[in-house]
Length: 205
Image 1: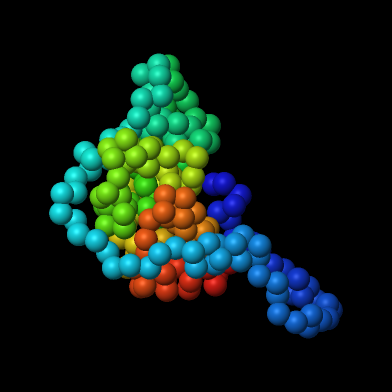
Image 2: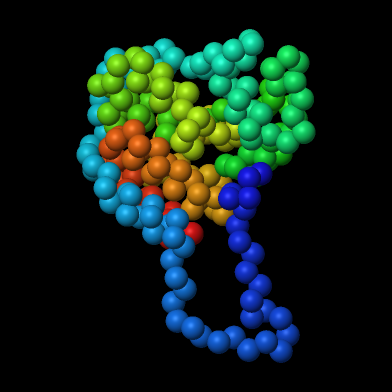
């Protein structure tokens, strides 16, 4: 698993004979402070209608040449000891951020959209062109695509953080930061409940 997803293990003051000195409130991590500020720039609005939605309106996975696609790219990026047939990923191991499971086959891995396609539709993407929606569904430049277990991805579905969070609490900070990054870049709205949930999750940073 990427080091940014691992919780910090704080041992200061736990060693025998050490005196714990109160230095006042701990400084808020820069990443967390930035995410809070970015969250405040998002437009709060009620969720839009699902009328007209279909996954086919978000074409994925985009071809990346040599019989490979964006899914292969994410599997390669997020996996360890990845093996290929041509450029197709056929073996490796993946740490599922959402539930902590170790996956030993690409067939057990789902590529999750951090901000689900249906959620994006309800928060502004319904007004986009098909080309824009394709760019969103295949976005490798933001933390929008992540290799996770099938069970956790399907449990999440199209839910936002007000109704679904990763079962591994230690990942809530990075999950909230990534969600905000994606919504901010793509200028998607958040509901008031979604914003409250993201605020709570950032408090775990």
